[in-house]
Amino acid sequence: MKVRVNVSTPQITLDKVFQGANTEEIVRAMQSEAATHVPFLLRKMVTGLPPIQFVREVVRRYNDTMVKQLPPPSSCDDFIQMGVSEGFVTIVEK
Image 1 (cartoon, rainbow, N blue to C red):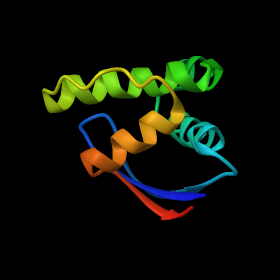
Image 2 (image 1 turned 180 degrees about the horizontal axis):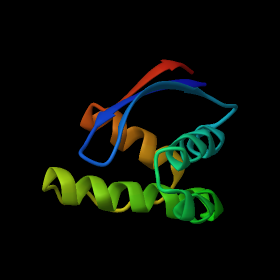
Image 3 (image 1 turned 90 degrees about the horizontal axis):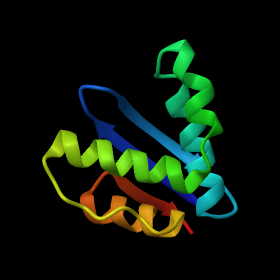
């Protein structure tokens, strides 16, 4: 599976294709990339989160930035579908 993430907020600008066998692998790749955009002392925290906690934090910050009230995702699949609905994720290949 391949997805393209294209998001621009005051905290991060990201336009990249991520690939994995499933959505959890894709989220882990997103997590690794996100860690490169945070201060050094926060990188360990970002990479140490379980994928579900990471996507919930992403949605929480997205809600704050975009003034939305999206529910926390219940899975990595749910997060990818939410991203597609919101327009910041495009499924390139299933």
